[in-house]
Image 1 (cartoon, rainbow, N blue to C red):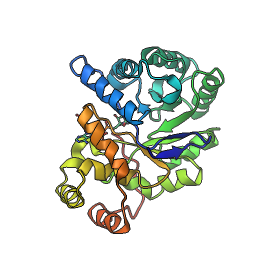
Image 2 (cartoon, rainbow, N blue to C red):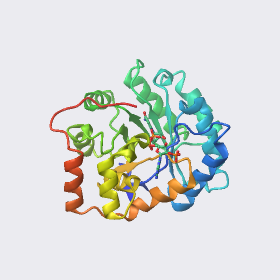
Image 3 (tube, rainbow, N blue to C red):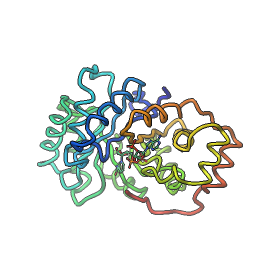
Image 4 (spheres, rainbow, N blue to C red):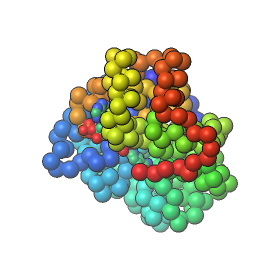
Length: 276
Ligand code: NDP
């Protein structure tokens, strides 16, 4: 496994597991098996949210982690912005813990920006941290100007910004990623294979074939090419988990990186942060 260092020095796997769309009754057993396989391989960072299946994904994760020593896992969940208030955040955090079957989260994120003042959310996150309910907190889907505001509201201790980032979504490279780097916050890249759409890109397929890897492996290795970027692909099938895990073995040399830059150009101007 390759690791990314968090601001507090903790090392977390650069390749984690996403869970959006997981937890339906129909697919649950297959998904639990996929998550378990990922854990066994060392993809112990698991990203979920109260939003995913309105709790169903957290229940699915809870089932998958049963029997795994808690300290070997890094569990991330996210709160709806409308729940990120002094009054509601502690309650929804407790509900997430219950669904996951654990007594703390390693990282709790504000899912996106809403109308609750940042200062109130930050103060409540800090109270949850002091109470031992969460180990760290951070944000998701905040663009550079939002991050500036978050910091101004007292949010310097933010662990990460979880953002949409992949070969077809390079906008954050222009300003947001450099900003996060300057503030020593690693990036957690969501939808790293663009929800599967990237894998149908003919040019990527051809390049991957020439390199004897799969498009998913190439796309993931590219996202994780910097030491401060984690990728959290969602894979609901064991075969996909195994395939994605092997992306950690890929070394992208300058020639391959230049080829990918040609196919998926880096941004030359500010683009507003896209959200899925
Ligand atoms: P991903 O880019 O991770 O793509 C997931 C899709 O790709 C699934 O359909 C999956 O199929 C497929 N896939 C994965 N690996 C392979 C493979 N090796 N070969 C073929 N297909 C593959 O999209 P997500 O939107 O799910 O993003 C990942 C995670 O990021 C989410 O699950 C969630 O945890 C988080 N996220 C956070 C957001 C936020 O607002 N903070 C927004 C969006 C996502 P299958 O399941 O069949 O294996």
